[in-house]
Every structure is written in structure tokens, then in C-alpha cells.
Image (cartoon, rainbow, N blue to C red; front, side, top):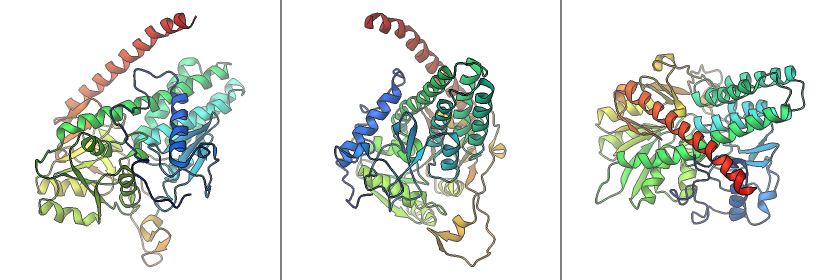
Length: 442
């Protein structure tokens, strides 16, 4: 840990938004090397030449003081994830070496945010495949299926988690679950996990750029954005969703001010969003959750931007508890309410919000604040982690395929088809480029 104050000129989370994409969808090969090199470069820039090689731990003095993403590779065998429970007081990392460790980190909110959860789950499963590459085929199959099930149940509401795990397991099935070639299986799952990370980077950049068109553009003052929970790099893995749009606005030369809901009971807004915006140099003000209504009533909010943990086929959206309340307030005061999420958060197999499982979390999150009791011992608690905002309260959904408008049944389905066509075209481009690259290297 370091006691040095943040230096926005060196610690921008969203630097050079248009040109600093870690890797684009058209260039998937070598993504793990690029990600590792990016992590090392970030650490060197922030902490000095020796920092990138420091082992991270609960109180490691060389732990990094700012990253765009919630994770970085320590080696081929381990991923380091920022322990988001410790922010903003301490920035420390936890080591993940396999799927059970990834599931534990997800369940206990070491890492959180739907897109980031999906990416860490995919990498954790790929690390397990690497560990099991010398196992007998049937044992390997049991190990991977058990690991996948453990990950799927870590947090039930966010669809990205199951989507990412299912994608790796489909790759495993395509190779042959009883194939004796453990090295090939490990390499394939590794490549699939890295493709998920690379695609997310490109998708979030596209999403942020698409979001520019939906924000008001006052001539004589900043656009005033209200956010809930955390939608920056810590939650998403790269640029962020709603906060990615915020930074895109600023980098476009437009003034912006962010009202940051504290987001009780886990305080992701106060602990994480305010910290990220401070690191990025974005003007912001922290508010109690219940201050949002009076701000809207006084005309001090131009737009509400929120993320999503799952979007049903009809547009109903599950997000952090308190989101539905904001949507009702926004409708009452005629403030646009915009959901910002990649299509990996869309679950077309779930017809409506009534079909989305809502995670119930520990009573301690409500009974205490940072370990200090705030209610009488034994007080009964209801602590749903998420709520569902009906589609009729949502002005638009911003995705990597553009701004989607009601009726969402049609616009979400059409966007998913566009995304699939783009992915198919990218795959064809890779297949055509590979022989040319091999011939040139020969």
C-alpha cells in the first residue's frame, strides 16, 4: 500500500479513450501477452521500475495504486485481482490460481460488477484447465464440470457469469470432453477466456462512444449525470459502461459533473465510483441515496446513467438495489433514465424481469458499516442485492451496437443479431489472415 495521494496526470483510468484500446476485436491473437505487458507498464508508470515484479498480498507495500482494470496477470499460473472490499482505504490484491478461488472471490465480492465477474470466471476456469492438463481424460472432465458449476452458482443474478462459463465449456465440448490432449484443451480454454477479455475491451469502447449521442449537451454548463452503484473499470474490466460514457464526454471536450449515489448498503458508489472518478480527474459530488429525488425536483439532474447485471428479453433490467427507485423518480421528474450495458448482459432466454433470480445477501451488510454495528443485535434483515426496473421506465439501453429504444423486445433481438454478424466477420478475418501471417513469417 502507498500513502501517496492520487495523481490524475499519471493515474488516468480512461486515458486516450479512442486510441488506447488494449486490443481490438480485429486483433485477438496474443491478447494475454498484451494484457500482461499492459499490466506491467501500468505498474511501472505508477510505482516505478521495480513495482511490476512485486508479489501482491494483503499488506504488500508494493501493491499498485491505480489500474484501469480490476485484474492483472502475475504469471501464466495466476491472476491478481484488486480486493474491492478494501477500497478506498487500501488498495491490495488477491491471487487467483483456479476456478474455486475465482468463485470465492466473486461470491465474497473481492471482484464484482457483471462484466468483470464474467471475465474473472472465464480466466479462473482456464487456469483450472491448465492445472488439469496432465490429468486423465475422465478425471479432467469431472474437474472442469465441477469447477464450472461452482462458478455458475457463485452469484445468481448477473448473467455474464453463466454466459462466460458456458462459452468456455462449449469450447471444451467442441474439442471433445474425453480427449487425451490436455495441453490442447488448456490452450483452447485459455484462448477463449482471452477472447472474452479482448471482446469486452472493444465492446465497452464502442458502448461509450455510442452513449455520447444520448446525453444532453448544455451550452452554458456541464451535463449533470447521476449514477448508482459502480460502473467503471473496477466493475467492467476495461473502460466501464456508464462511467465509460462519462469519460468519453469529458474527452470529447464537453463539461460533465457526476452526482454519485453512495449506494447502500454496500456503498459501492461512495467507496468505488468516487475513488475511480477521483483517479480519472472527473468532477463529481457524493450524495446520500435519498438526495437523488430532491436533486431531480430542483432540475439539477440531466440524465440518470446506470449499469445492468441482467437485461431480460423485454427490456426489464436487474441492477443494484435502489435502481428501481431512481427510475420511478426519474419518470416523475421527466429525467431520461438510461441503462448502459454490453450485450453479454442481455439474456434473451429470460422473458421478463419476473424470471430473473434476485440474490439475497448477508444480514451483516445491513446491520454493520465496515464492521461497526448500526442496529440492535438480532434485528431481522431483508437484503436483496438487486431490484428489477420495468422496461416502461427505461428511456434507452446503450450497448456496443448502439442506442436501443423501445420496444426493447425488437431492438434487443436486432442488436444481438448485429453483434453475432460482427463476431462472425471478425472470425472469418482471423481465419483468412492466419495463412498469410504464416507465409510471411516463413
